Image 1: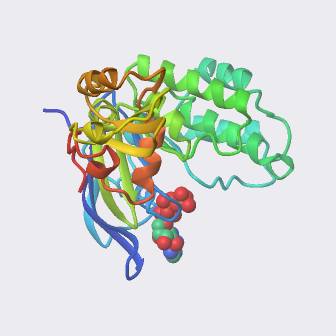
Image 2: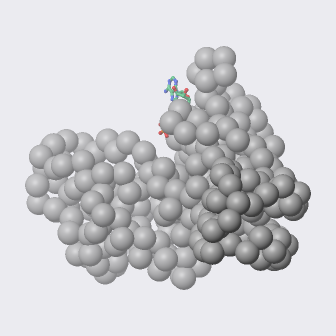
Length: 312
Ligand SMILES: Nc1ncnc2c1ncn2[C@@H]1O[C@H](COP(=O)(O)OP(=O)(O)OP(=O)(O)O)[C@@H](O)[C@H]1O
């Protein structure tokens, strides 16, 4: 069996008690896009830096394609594209110099992909790094991570500093990378972007993984909402008995509820109450992520009717 692109086992890296990451385990399989989410300071960058061999863990291990994080062989340089959360390019070099260095390091001769990325993102190649805006440095970072068409992309907040048009361009590039079978670990605060791109989501909070589940399973637990208006006073007690339904607010002539799983049992009970209008909104994954971010557990976030997922 071939080694997965990313395998992290019982990784602990602490800077002070309860600061850092504790006992983190996760796997990213070939061709998978794994969204890596969590509030500021949760431990995403620390995990990624351990994976990239930039931090030495206190305990546990982090492997890419079966190779330990500390190994620096040429194959690994070619197979992995890393975009750090904070870019530190030598200030006096130009964008062209930086990309030439990366190409040399990876033994890259065919510059077709580099040229195409530079063109699509509108990268400034001739100006020294210290004159570039944050967004323009970020674009250069993206080109340096993608220019050699690596099998694995490790991207720490890739759209940070990009304007909305470039965020769209980046999303298109990610769809293309996924279509080509590349594997992506995507740390991002853009929840809608992760909901669109990822196959799986790992959420870390205060250094520990709290959710590791597929998008499909999470979608099944994400609550949808229904607003009901009546031209007569109603008693909503029947609705609150339906598994998976939670009444958010109710007045005699208006009810707001959330539901998980099949909407059919709720609809049957709603029809019996004869509303004059029904407004239904499907489950929004980014809303579910946000609630998990904030500390809600997966079962409560999806009310009490959904899957239990693999919340820890
Ligand atoms: N070099 C360091 N020295 C001391 N503490 C650190 C260091 N790097 C990270 N930490 C601490 O480890 C914890 C995790 O930080 P980390 O940067 O991994 O979080 P993050 O999830 O990437 O956050 P953000 O979303 O803000 O980028 C925080 O408490 C942070 O202060």
